[in-house]
Length: 388
Image (cartoon, rainbow, N blue to C red; front, side, top):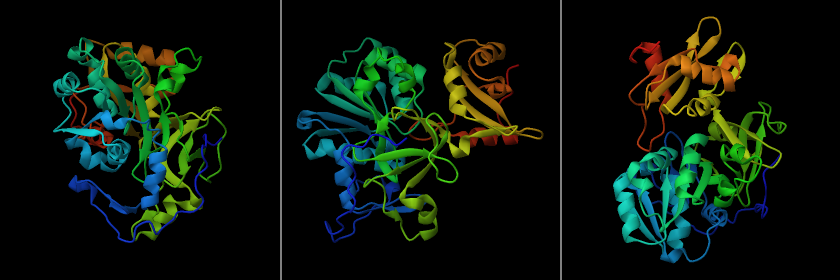
């Protein structure tokens, strides 16, 4: 089924709001303004009217002019389009922006000590680090208003810990450069609605379609799949890019049928809550069955000795691929312990065939795990020996 729509998206875009075409290469880290954004590996086009619609979907309450917004310089090259768009509602009302050189827990706490009404934009790994930092547990969080997070998977076990510490201050945003942070959202009320019988299931979702946005899940032939079934997430709204700059082949593939094809795999329930399963490139196919790494990672993170984990596929001569889990442990845990946990919670064919214990997971500047490096380590035998 389609996501919630309120109000319906405009049917036409006024294209003469600005005559001059302004653009920016996002990797420079400068603030963008206007009509064009250039991204790697493609360049994409967003019309100024798109930003009006994006702002309408931000659900920004009044009186942001007295707020302080914290962001981090070092994540801008990777998350430029998303976070800059999200900052606009604050800046238009005169809010103060505090740009820290990089993510640093003591620096964030120092901001809270000196300023009121502080909101924060963070990647999920940053939120997890905040929730697990010992100094945060005893800190005065009275002036923390909202933590907006997105840009990667947020596991339910980590989210529950964050909610226990920060309370109803969390807001998840889901989107991509082609539709910046505007596809779905899980607001503070939905985060805090623990009385709902499906509350934990909803925490594992990325919320419902934003105002003026259509979202649905389709199969390989672009037919909408029944609720609960996995398919590709597609979206349509005036927030979606006009197209990739001078790349008609990519436009025809990505925007076919008038819908933005995200290449993200997910499912939608009867109430319109969208749950991300994985990027299509990360899905594991073993013995003809689709295995979604995030499902396994959610289970492994339930073990108190597992600090971080990442699941990838490894080529197998008979099954095509087999499941391998990389584990960063906070205390001693054996492969047998983790195997028992998986057998109790997921189908046997999905459980990892090997657990590799490592000191850390490879990540990019804003904390997203680089699964391509993990797969390369498996292929070339560069990772330290697994614990058996």
